[in-house]
Image (tube, rainbow, N blue to C red; front, side, top):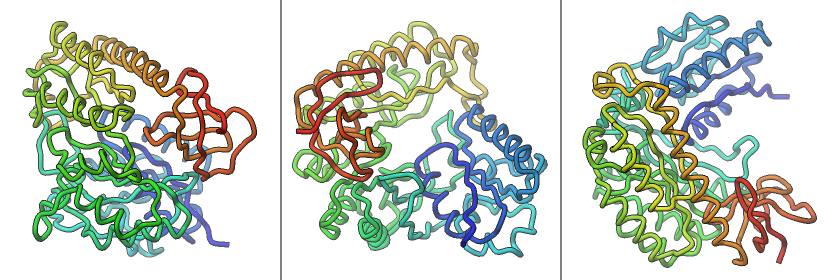
Length: 415
């Protein structure tokens, strides 16, 4: 029987996809634990270090390989942890040759990620324990938001060609997946380095046209000001393009957005939300938010809190600001950590109230739900749904009628 490595994944959906690439490459290596780290926050790094120490205690004979953005940026911080036998960079981790028995003897293999110019496509047809699949279409970022260290972990923006994306999606559909999520670091920059400079919406159109068997296509996080017209048209008219947007918003105060070096202002974000709802009134909209960014006083935070409440966004990912060494924001006047945490909690409370109202708006409206367990799944708008009554088969798409709102989602019954 082929030995499958244990993989501990932290961070984004792109890391989830990359973990599956590594799982394929590392089969048969014996007692190996792979830790795929994230560098977005100090908390993410702390959790990864804690997981490494726990893994070594519980399995002292295992060879631990650490990779991901945190390992790429500061490999020396990880190579000395107990049980760690190898540190791999973000480019190296996706290469099959990095996972040969001979290569595992090399303690550190981390190249200059800023020199990367291409992103190779990798065929992944199995996602452990999941019913939706992720496809990487873009890698890296050319922007320099003042709070973000990720460009130094991922390198410059580079796109996966259309043909390779279509091949991946076709293989996943053939393997039984009914929903595919396109993902990347700065996904709306897809195509800027390809001939003719196509845009992300054109890629989505090609995937839907060339893989007619694909039932559901979804996007991960997008930049509000870079949503192209093809995406808007798909949202309005294409039933297989899911009515869902997750916005890289970060703040709801113009002064803070400028200090973050974001590419949008509050008015831009409000326009995107209004346009999305005018096309699909039931659309699910989420946003990433940073609480307690440097220089944020009570008045500026209240602008963000009020904006988020006015927009009534049901899916919020809220993070207390975390200093990242080497970024401009780390040199700005800091907000005390307890205030950051309190503001994050306040934003999450706004999000929970908006979510409850949003779920209530879906009551009595039939939903198509992809079942991820025998009793739970997500609607097209990404609303969590619990099935009342007889259990379903995992991977089924059911027509369900929401009959109640509970904490964290909807209760529905078969139609």
